[in-house]
Length: 71
Image (cartoon, one colour):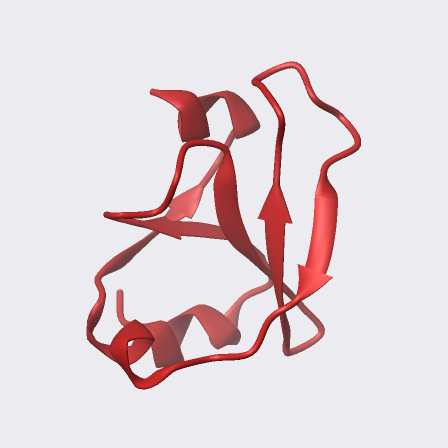
């Protein structure tokens, strides 16, 4: 899915090229960057995120578990 499409459903999203443990979180139409220290981290750091044009060209997929961010 494309960047614009991730705003249609709240959740966590990741794309190729993201660092391990990092993903976007969409919550009530707001974009956040979420970073987990490791696959057992249940209190990740969350930051409001400023966008850039390159994000619109990436192909995104839904994240179902935080552990998958480390595979």
